[in-house]
Image 1: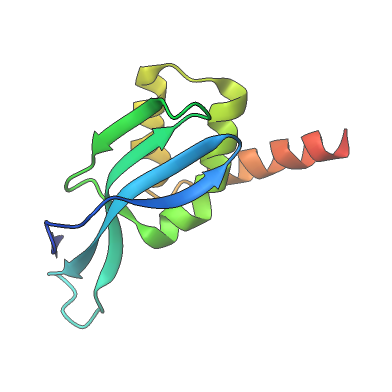
Image 2 (image 1 turned 45 degrees about the vertical axis):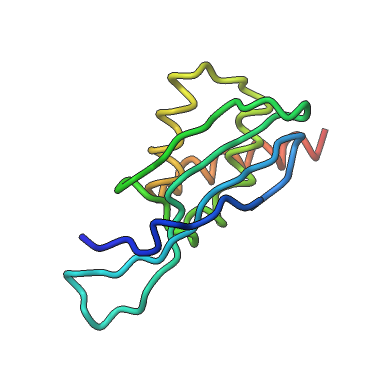
Length: 121
């Protein structure tokens, strides 16, 4: 549990790969159950555009924020998955919450293996 600060955060470009550009709003998160933990950066909105600038995903994440450490460790694999699997809107939305808003090491492991296999071929 925690509190998110800076409701007036501005959208910024976060990552570019595989023909996609990722934008988001970053805020500060204060842990209320761990008062000795430092403020952490969290992503509270996420927008992904394709190579033509069309939005393929655009959501305010609210309390289902993504901690930037998890986001930074996962976003490349996530965009690789979008490029190769071409998920529908439901699958994409579910994957955002399953892979970017929570730490899904199995997803990262599978995507790294697929990228390695593709690289070898």
